[in-house]
Image (cartoon, rainbow, N blue to C red; front, top):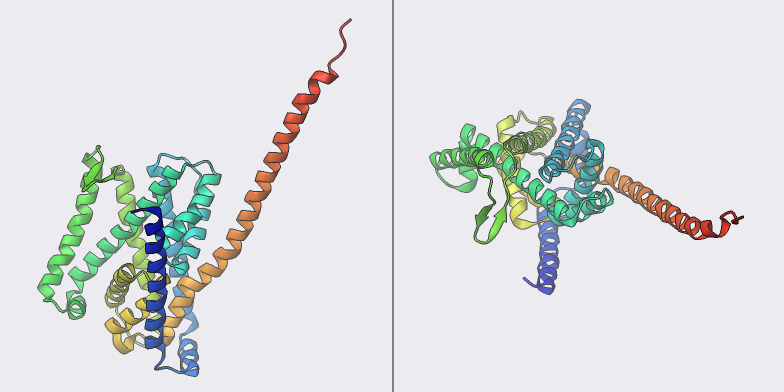
Length: 331
């Protein structure tokens, strides 16, 4: 694909995503008045809201592990605090902007390049993070399909036995990934696409961290829905996994509209509009508005350091030019 076509595809996908998000959001919210939405949010007890915030924070902590695995994959020993900073800013902004792989990748590049990484290394980090996302969804999806096949069967309109088999296949695929990482040392090639498998330790970390992340986000969603209904964790996790699959298919920015409609479709009246709005605010808006000033402060620090290094280099050149002129005269 040429550069021009790639840009047309990217912008076209973004326009489609925003349009679809707007339409779905209208469909999801048009049946409620603003007063009803506010009242529904206020009905969520403080304790449930607090637990949801804690689960959200733990999820973003897990997300820093995505980058940690990627950085170790490219055999770099960058300190964890720097990795955590780059990860939080990139994902805090990227998950709300849309096309998270592209937007967060560009933000990551700004940070990692400043710390001496090459473009190739950053691309590998972004790729491995994407694989970790897929593994997390695969494992959690497999678990909920095995333990709760009925809800998924109703949504996909297939037999529960077929859902059960699909869940087992998902889990076996994750096991196969670890097996390949353990024994395959040459690049994995599929139709011209090449991928160097990580070491087994990193592959295991990807599965644990990726699954834990989505499990925590599902718990965040469940806590908010528990405010008005007795919602089981498995059903909330099922709704969230299916919502994320729909987001990946539609590319809607931050899953706006898509997640809400999918969860409402799976949960019915158990997913109150207040719970969905509160989840959107907690998991997307709050991290975004924290990451935004952090990114601006980081950028200012990067520019100041660059200017200071440039000034030091200029003074060193001036000293080098002046030093011959101030040598002591020979006797």
